[in-house]
Each structure stands twice: as C-alpha cells, then as structure tokens.
Image (cartoon, rainbow, N blue to C red; front, side):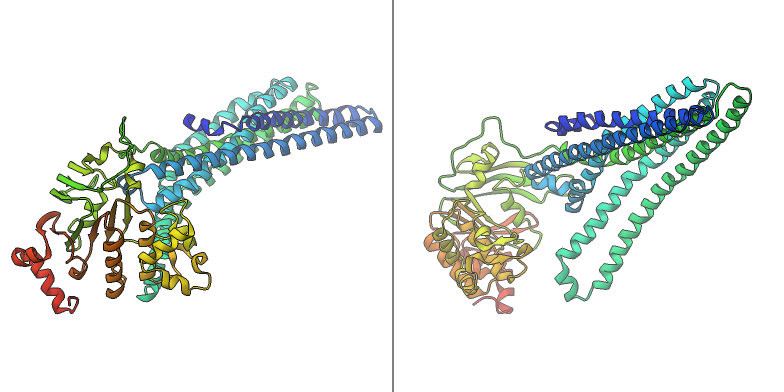
Length: 577
C-alpha cells in the first residue's frame, strides 16, 4: 500500500487537518464521561445543587459542540483528500493503459480494465477517507479510554485483559477467512461487467437474432455467481458482529457487577461506575471500528493488487534509447523473414517467415481467407505488435528503431473494425490531424466519398455521432473512417478490409481517387473481393500465415492455384465482372 502514498502529493494539507480535527473530537468524547460522573456524584448525590448541575450541563453541551465541529471538519477534509487520491490514481491508470501495446491490452479484458479503473479505485479511495477518520479516532479512543478507565478504578480495568484478546481473536479469524474471498468477488464483478459490455455493444445483433432471453440468462448466471460469492464474504463479516457484541455486552455486565461490589465497599462512586461503563463502551467500540477498518483494508488489498497488476504491467512496445525522429519521407515497406506469435499463445506462429518489399508509391494488395494472418501482418507496420522474429522496415529502418509517435504519424490506418467517437463529424475527422482546417476536412470527405451524405445532413459537418457512430450506416462509418486517415496525408496508407460495407460503385470511386490524388503514398490494401485488388502493383496471397503467391493479377491467374480458386468462386457468385 506504500506505493499509493504518492497519490496524496498535493493533498497533504487536508491529510494533516483531518486527523488534527479528529483529535479534537476524540478529546471531547473522552471528556464527556468525566463530566457526567461529576454531575452524578457531586451535583446529585453530593448535593452541590442546581447551579452546579446546570454549569456542568452547559460544559457538556459546549464540549459536544466542539467535538461536532471537529468531527464535521475531519469528515470534510478527509473526503477532499480521498477524492483527490482517487482522481490522481484513476488518471495514472488511464495514462498507463494509453501506453499499452495491443499485446498488453490482450492480457486484460476491457471489462476488467474498466472495473479496475472505477470500482477498484473507489475501494482504495474509501480506505483513504476511512483511514483519515478511523485510524486516528479508533487508536486514540482505545488508548485514551484505557487511561481514563485505569485512572478511575484499576481493579475494574482487569475486565479488559479478557475482553480485548477475545475481540482481537474474533477479528483476526474473520479477516483470515474473508480476504481471499474479496479477490474472487472483484473477479466475478469483472465477468458481470464483461457480459453487460458485450450485450450493449452488440444489442442490435441480440435483437436481430431474438436472443434477448439467452442474454438475460447469461447475465443472470454471471450475476448469480457475483451475488453468491459476495454473500459468502459478507456472511463471514456479519458473523463477526454478533461475536464482538456478545463480548462487549458481557464486559459491560461484568463491569456493572464488579462496580456494584466496589460501590458497596466504598471504593467507587455510582457516577464513576457510569463513567467507567461509558469508557468501556468507547474502548470496545474503538476495537470494533478498527476491525471494520481492517476488514475494509483486506477487501481494498484485493483491489490494490488488481490495480498494481495494471500499473506494473511491462509495456512491451517502447521507444529505443536513441530513436529515429526523422519523419517517414518515402513510404517503402519491407518484411524480412518475419514470424509472429501472440504473447501467451500456444501452437504455431500466426505469421511464418514473411518476406516482401513495397516501393514508395506502389499499391500492395493482400488477399486470403479468414484467419490467414492478413490483419496481423499490417498491424506490425505501425508497431501495434512487435515481431517475434525477423524485421519490419519502413524507409529502410527497423520500425523498432523509430520514435513510436513519429512512425505512426507517417502511417494512416483504417482498421477492420470501425471505431468512431461521440462528437461531431468534424471532431472525428480531426483525429487524423488536430489542426485541420474546414477546407482540409471537406477535401478528405470528398476523397472518401463521404461528402455527399454529410451534406444531406441538416447539421453537415457539425452533425453529432452517437456512441460508436450508431446513427450512421456501416458504409457511412467506413467512409468517415477512411476520411479520417486521408486527412493525415500519410506516406503509408493501410486499408484493413475497410470498404467491405461500401457498395462496389462507391468502392471503385474511392480506389480511383486514391490512385489519382494519393499517388505518392504507399497503399497497402486488404480486401475480400478480387475486383478491389486486381489493379494493384503487387498482390500477396496468404494462407495459414504464409505467403503462397505474390505477383500481379495476370501472373497469379496464370500460375497460382489459390488465387484462381478465389477468383472463380467469386465469378460464380457474381462478385466479379
């Protein structure tokens, strides 16, 4: 937990003020039984009179008000400190996730990262607030209460020698049993969030296939698992309370019984017995508070461990010590004996001994069946993954020697899965270039064949996209995604099957525009239709992670069986003219 103290930097004034004010409240709490004892023994039994009782009553009220001010002030500053802590920690986790490579992200599920950034942070945030209140209040009440109680009557204080070890034993046993369960609880919460996320992301598919009942059942199973383990953990916590309460009540009865004997013997006064009981209650309650705090810490420890996994995750794609900062000027791409395997995956490599070269300004098309490794291959160029063996060269330099931002600035990539963000169309297109003018935005939209449908929208480029662009069709989203890449005017432009939802005529217009206006850029195109790749300078045919053919459309039609099979199967389906 020490590593998390740095997140309180900038909040130390609140961290100091909260305990100071809590000390004031504790002092007032410990003073009240003493005043009550004087009221009973001196004012009532001693016959000091009405005025003495009134004065002591006013004193007690004043002490209570001061204590209340201390308690409220402590709560205020403790809350400020804990909220600041949560803010800084969430910010650090988010920044770390932004540094992750695809391989790092693959290690954690999206739902788990969301839970760790929200629910787990809240757990630690609550502990900070609780620590600034209870970690001062409980020990001070405990120590102060014992001092006051022993001062009143040392013989009665012997009760604590029995009660305190019993309560501590109950608490220790409970913590030992519940700590492992809370880590499981957070894991089950991850699964609940994963089901919710998948359902909401794919809600259209769920409705289209009438699978609402199935999804409800799946969520119910995940929810039941979470509830069951949570009940088990909290049941153990609940069992602690009656055990501690029994010990406390027996202790009070013992104090009253022994106190009555001491009063009868003239060794104590009635008011002192009442005060002793109040101190005993505070002492034992402080142990209860500490137990609750330790229970919360045990639960937060599971959250801290999960957060530490994210913060300690070694980012496997980082800048070299002396990175190349020169921009990508030409756009040549070369693969030299490249092999790749996903981290932690067993079996064979996903890519096996891949070698080819694309000259600046050339168009390379990649064709192959699903799972042949096409997307994995292009993900290696902007260094979204690192090769397992071999080299990927851009302008003759290994991509691992580039400054990552510089490398990716020279590459425009349209991913297979279109992701648009909540905001206006112009906001989304400016992802490609922050300072793009309206003229540049319109030009990119025209090249991507998106200008027409944008102009038909009453709000034009100020039209707001819903989450993931839900208020636009698949083809429109793809064209916006293409425009976002084109606005960068990159030297290397990668299309990962990014026109699959676009009709053939529009796809042809996009290809024509790219040839005419982006001729200096190297184009790498993954496509399913041969009509989309037949004019490429080079065509790679992939199967099972290997290159099984490379050449032009005519040369592959002449001597490559795999390419011929794809071509004739599409002819039969009427996909080829």
